[in-house]
Length: 93
Length: 314
Image (tube, rainbow over all chains, first blue to last red; front, top):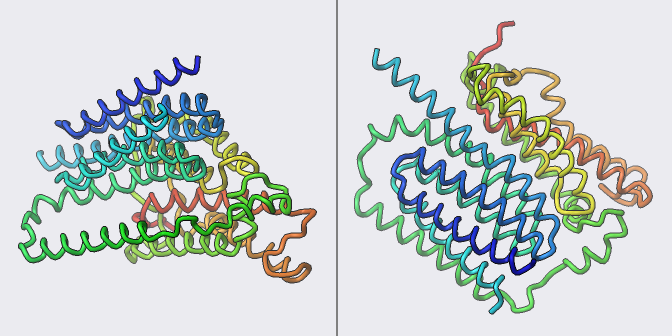
């Protein structure tokens, strides 16, 4: 069972690396934000698995905080983007 | 080489690569997103180093609240970036490069010159855990053994909020911080702002409570509560309280106030300033932490909301 969990951690780390590549490539800001979300989700999974494999139950608490707060940056991103769009449209008319 | 070492090496390489890219990339927005992802990954590394308390703070501040500050700054800078397109001349760039290289070299030398057996008080902190009845050595150090530092730190938070508020214009003085947010009341954001805070409040209080015996504490819990409050504000379901509100100011001074009150009690009835009576150490510390939870949540949220922008009709 532990081997399976360890292999899963390896798989998720590979996904994290792919998410990083996607952050580097972009091309748009929204794409980059979505990759950051993917990294947040992958980080939660990696924390839960590592906490179980290495016997650190408190890792679950870190995963909880990540789950609550990782979405936060994207909410701020959307809010800022929206106010920006509104400014643009009032400028245009 | 064990498989854990391989994972840690891969993670370190990924974080280093991401850090380099975040520094090198030109657009402010891309750098901000890179920094948020960097915070998330660094939290993983802290867990790998068994520093769960630090990982909790990094996840809350680096991955969550810090991202909002930087995104807000990037949104404000974006308008000025296109106009101020002039590049610094060669001398300035060379000077900056030399200064950065010197700082990096100094840090590297300092790390290489560290004594092999690092001087540590960690065993002493763990051995004296029974004195307070708390099992988490980090909370013991923060709240009891070095309580004075923590008390002054909370005063620094107050000074920070005074600094942000002092940026307000004369008309907006004492008004509501930040812009007025509006969102579709039936939209996704408003739905999330109704769904998430009940869960978030429970988790924030849990992080405070578990901090007595396991990793956690008032700062991390306060950061979670602050983000929940900001979510409700950003969804337009609630507004920021005016900076002149007396209740708000009471909450802002509650944490440091109670800390110093208990400290003075130690001076009057006990051995020294901040000396807790052994029998009541745990309830006293938890009481201070509860007051600090509210103060930290309010302070962090208001720091992120910004300077007062809208005057309140009196």
